[in-house]
Amino acid sequence: MSENIVIAGGGVIGLSVAWRAAAAGHRVRLVDPEPGRGASWVAGGMLAPVTEAWPGEEDTLDLGQESLRRWPGFAEDLAADGGDPGLSLAGTVVVAHDSADAEQLRVLGEYLVALGRSAESLTGRELGRLVPGLSVRSGLSVPGDLAVDNRKLLTALLAAARKRGVEFVPREVTGIRPGAVVAGAELRCDAVVIAAGARSGRLHPALAGLVRPLKGEILRLKPARGCLPPPDRTVRAVVEGRPIYLVPRADGEIVLGATQYEAGFDEAVTAKGVRELLEGAERVFPAIAEYELTEIAAGLRAASVDTLPVLGELEPGVLAATGHHRNGLLLAPVTADAVLAMLGGAPLPPHVGPTAPARAHSMIPEGA
Image (cartoon, rainbow, N blue to C red; front, side, top):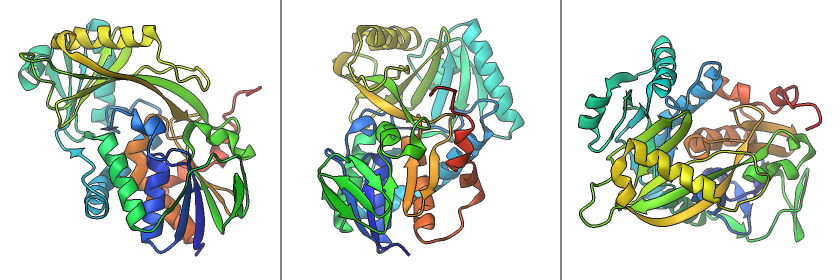
């Protein structure tokens, strides 16, 4: 067993791995100039493998559902070590604004039924009764897709990691080699775990071209006095072909997201992105037009060459746990368990096999 571990990156993945590894008896140092921030801080918090599913992405669905199965135990352990992560069991509805959007959801619904996944088709009127204030054509109810408060989760992970003895090194990682991480000084170790999100591709040549930044903007809003309250569950919507989501928080706020486009490492919020989110949300939940806008932010998702993360050994002593695309929060439990297995020399379970780094190299576009 590799006992002395350095983790590069302090988002939800790096923190989850650090906490679990320290609890398992490893000496863990986590290197990040601002742990608990980055893309994880501006996430929506959906734990939604089913409503993220699409034909041809069966491996992603299977991995997501396996991680979702682990989430209640993960949340219970985390509550004991670091605090309540804000897991919501209210479920999800995915809705269509017009007939073209409804056709897209029909394809999704038929696909899920064929796979034996639970998704109930509902009319617009039925959805309006289930979630007061919705104004939509049709949709699906997916009670098994859950949500978590990303900021409560990160706060709890930081506390749990500290309780378990994780040492935090507030520096920028500038280099990685077997047995060492360079971050102002050389940190020697038995194993390195690269969990630096969108910046992982810059840290090791085997990840160059495999992991890239994918920009997304989110808004936070809260109802003004006299407004209809937010939905009591996650609402995912397709509005003229564009996806949006509304994820309620226990304190009455609602997270609205998320745009998705290639912009390199630019994290500026654009007027176009804000406009698209607000216009889309108002079409499916008109009351939001009267809400108070409390925050606008952008983050960089760590996109891989497909919809699967990159989990596995890059070379002896260097492991990758990155490229989680839109599913970093969802996949935190299964990723942490997979890294612990690798550190202990145990075989990886079948659902993790498709995430191996080697599978992705043949998919890199020429010139990337």
